[in-house]
Every structure is written in C-alpha cells, then in structure tokens.
Length: 298
Image 1: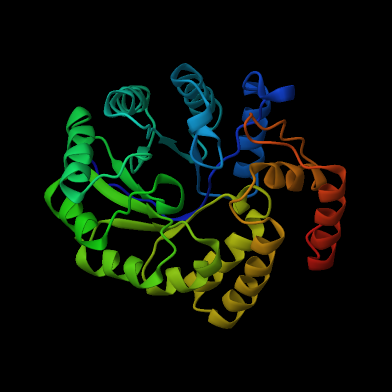
Image 2: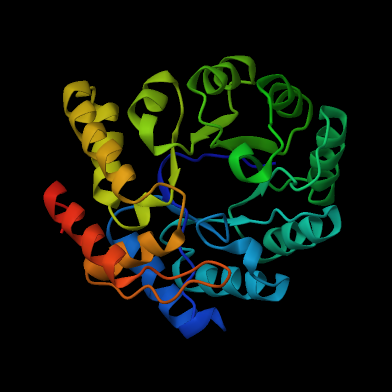
C-alpha cells in the first residue's frame, strides 16, 4: 500500500440540494469544492454528517463523489464518507470510492443499535478487507452514531489492520484523542473533528481538522494550522478563541442550515437542506447575521 499522508484543513463539505431538498445540486457542489480549493484547504470530506450523507441514497453519494473527483480531485484530496447503518451498503460505497480514485474512505461507527467492541472490530475488519490496499479512516462520532470508538479499540484496529490508516475523531474528549495518538503506530493519522480544541489537538499531535465550520470560515482554520506549523502559538491561540466563539454562533452541529446560511451571507449560495433537516426562520437568520457581524466574520 502506498504511503498515506493527510494533514491540514479539510472541510466536511456541505451538499447543496435543490429547493425542498428534492435533488442534489451537483453543479453547485462543484462550485463549492472549487471555492474551497481556491481558499487553500487541503482536502474535502464528502457525504459526512455535515454533508447530510445519511439522508442521501447510495447512488447520490456515488455520483457526488464521482463529480467532485472529476472537478477537484487534482487540486485537493477527496475523501469519501462511506459509512452506513449496515455493513453491505458501507462496503458497497467503500469499494466504489476505491475503484474511482478517492484518496481515502472515512467510515463512521454504525449507529442506532448498541454494538460492543467485538462487533465494531468485526465491522471495521470486514470493511477494510473489502478494499485491500485502499486507505480507510475510522470516524468516531458518538453524539450521533451512539457507539464510541474507544482508544483501545482504535489502537487495536490501527496496529493490526494495515489499511486502517487514521481516524477522524469527533468524540469531544481530548484525553481520549491523545491516547489514540500515543497508542497507535507512528504513521497512523489522527484528524481532529472538534472545532473547540483545534489548536490544542494540533499541539498534541493531531495532523489537521475535518470540520463543518471550515466550509464557511476556512481562513480561521488555516490561520491556526499555519501558525502552529510555524511555531507561532500565540497567534494560533488568538485564532482559536475566535473559532470557539464562532462555533457557538453556528450552534455547532445542531443544524446544517446555519452553515448554508453562513455561506450565503459570505457570498455563496449553498442550496437547501434535505428534510427532516429544516431551514432557518427569518428571525433565526437575522440573529445569526447579527452575531457573525459582531465577530467580524462578514
């Protein structure tokens, strides 16, 4: 397997939908990927939580990946989120991602039912074995997926399965993330998924960020990442303070519509959300704009 390298700022790219969320607006998705590439991000994470991937059909997810790879795959690293509630669909999407040249696949822990660590081990082993030699990233998101990928399980998967090459950790526990960094093999890539401690995660050994908020304000993430790389920790912490305030304004993780409205306010029409997600009310939009103005982000 070729060497896997991933670092920097990787927006969890929004998926634009037509009015009412009826269909994917592929043209607008291409424009968003191009905008992010021009802003200097290092990659995009498609069809994840922010991308409303679990509200899309398998065919929509495949087509979106094909479209973005064709339009932006030479400029930025394109990672496909392929996780589903069932193993068969997850393997199908992961095999598709491998076959068309995605840089890697990210696979969220299966949700709804409670699974013990033996079940989660079997699940990820089966996914990895379906795509030998293709990079697979674990994705820890217990707030949505219910099932936690513990540091011990992550270490076992990382150290025993060659093509499980990293993790997007959105568990929200910095101590657990540090354990993942310390207990996994040296080339295992830990990517932080919690905006509130982006700076602290980078200082602790995380290689970068996969973030919803980076769709709207990638320059803040880039400032933190670049400042840490240069050793300017005071500057990095200043930008982290701004980012932490911004996450509150975006009602971090609660509603995808805030991110799409944020992009609209910054000059890019990101389309509609897909039900049962809902759009913001006029009152919510007005207050959101006021708060972004106060932070100097418009």
